[in-house]
Length: 129
Image 1 (cartoon, helix red, strand yellow):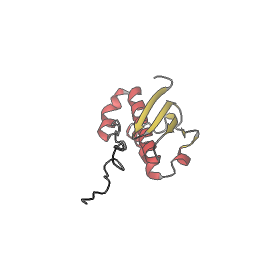
Image 2 (tube, one colour; image 1 turned 120 degrees about the vertical axis):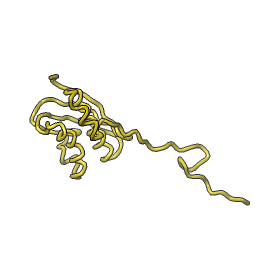
Image 3 (cartoon, helix red, strand yellow; image 1 turned 90 degrees about the vertical axis):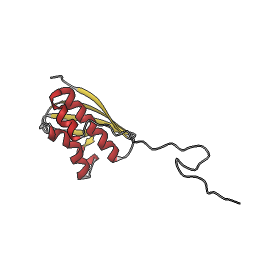
Image 4 (tube, one colour; image 1 turned 30 degrees about the vertical axis):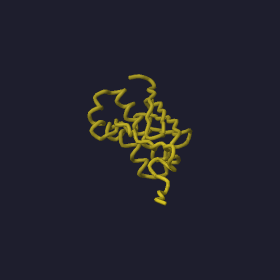
């Protein structure tokens, strides 16, 4: 078992860099406590879900650096990074994590503004005369 695993997870424009090592289950995100950084219970559960599926909730210490996007995007990026790290450590977890959808990157991005229009899809008002 490697000492420290470093992985990257992304969702929309959020990026999470994860350092995972065997430990007692402490999670630090951007130097802050996990529950302090993500006060919403639904986001906390989303992040912990890959660890629950792998039955390794209190076996790893996680140190995460995340930036970009919003809190939901960052939570999704952290979840992907955790799932990737668990698969890197133990390849037999891959089918169960893939079945839950934790190894799929969410590629959705904001569509770019087009020239000659006020937004990505919106058009300027049409005037016949």
